[in-house]
Structures are given as structure tokens and as C-alpha cells.
Amino acid sequence: MLRNVLLVLVLLAVGAAQPPDTLWTRRAGGGKWDSATWVDPTDDGGCVIAGASANSPTYLCYRYDSTGRQLWRHAGYYSQRYHCVRQTPDRGFAFGGWERLGSDADLLLGRTDAVGRLLWTTTVGGDSDDFAHSLCLTSDTGYIAAGRTRSWGITQEDLYVVRFDRDRTGIGEMPQPGRVLSSPGPTIIRGVFNFAGAGHNPILPGESGLCPRPAQLHDISGRKVMNLQPGANDVRHLAPGIYFIRPAAGAGPDAPAGHRVVIAR
Image 1: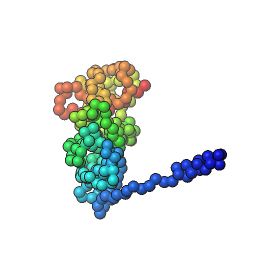
Image 2: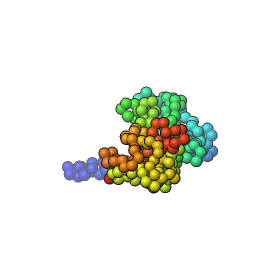
Image 3: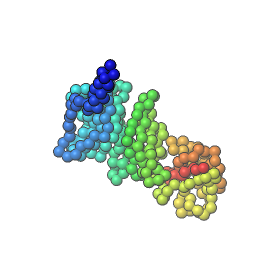
Image 4: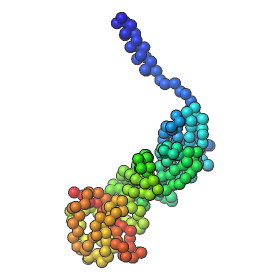
């Protein structure tokens, strides 16, 4: 009896150690390079694949059924990379990645219908590179994209998360930079922010003395959290994080869009 039990265990162990059978393989692409960066299962037992391509047309998304038959392929632009893709409740697809516009890349979010026809795309980002590496759907039919940023980080490169509503409006992205003042790094604030003196004026660089223009402090979503007055401004009631100093309404069209500050403890 013991011998039979041991024999069964050995057979089970050998069976578990065997590699799985290959059901099918497929290749897709052109004469130049093509790559896949994400695969996600679909509700019919098939899959959808996102990636990048140097070919023309630039196919960035492929859809296969459970037998490996290609149902459709979706072409984007050479400047785009689809790094992640998810099936949506209406059997369409949402994808995230980035699009390089000039020398900088912006985080890219887009939607197709069930047969791969493009419905819309939107981009967010700053004055440097911003990327989406993963994507998930929210319970209210919105989207969350996560990746990395070189535009908004405290260091050279930081984590970047953007929350979109169902109308593809960024709820939690960093404010658009406009003409954000260039500086070697953010201003670090601990406790009290002194908006006076002959030091660096974040709203009007190069000026000294009290700031002659009204200003506001905005959080990372673009919401105003307080008005800034010339002199000392107590910010100890605010949570640590990234904020932006911006001219108040009526400051004039030539006023800079904002200056990044970090409130620390």
C-alpha cells in the first residue's frame, strides 16, 4: 500500500514538472522592428496585445481569439507607443502609453471600439517626458494610468499617476505647465512661506522686495488651497506634497503659469 502511494506521488510530481503544451504561436510585424509590451485576456478567451513598431503602417494593438486567429490590428502613429491595454465593459479597449511631440513625450490615453476603431486619444504632461506603463479601469468607468515623469518629479524621475473620469478629463494630473518658470528644482517650504525680501521671487523672477502681484497656492490637481499675501504665509495646515504658486485671476496674460513648491514637514 505504501509503495502504491509513493508511486502515485512520484507520478504526480513528474506530471507537475512537465512544461505546458504550446497551443499556438503567432508572429506579426513588418520589415523593421516590432515589439509587444503588454498582453491582456479578453472575455471570449482570446487576448489583446499592445506594443510599438517602426513600420508603416504603425500597428500598435492586435486582437486574437482563443485559437490564435487575428481578429483585427489597430494602427497608430510612429510617434506613439502603446504600453498597456485593457478591455472595457462595452467590449472596447482602453490603452495607455506615450506620444512624442517634438523633443518631449506626453502620457497618452486612448479608446477603441470592439473592432479596433479609434474613438479618441488624449495626452497630459509637462515640459519634459511623461510615460504611462500601466492602466486600470475604475468602478465609475474612468481610468487610472501610472508610469513615470521627468516633468513634475522632485528628483530627476518620479512615479506619475493620473486619474481620468469617463469623459477623459484628468482629475489628478499635474497642472499643465504653460510657461512654468525654469529652475534647478522646486522651492522647499517648511512651516511658513515668506513671500517677501530680496531673495528669489517665484512669481516675478529677478525682482526683490514684496511681491507686487496677488498669488495663489494650488494643489497637485489644480485646486486653489489658499491665497498668498506679501510677507509670511503659514502653510502648516496643508498636507505635505507638491503645490504650485500661480498668479491670481486678473494678474494679466503675461504672468507665468506657476512655480512648483514642495511643502515638507
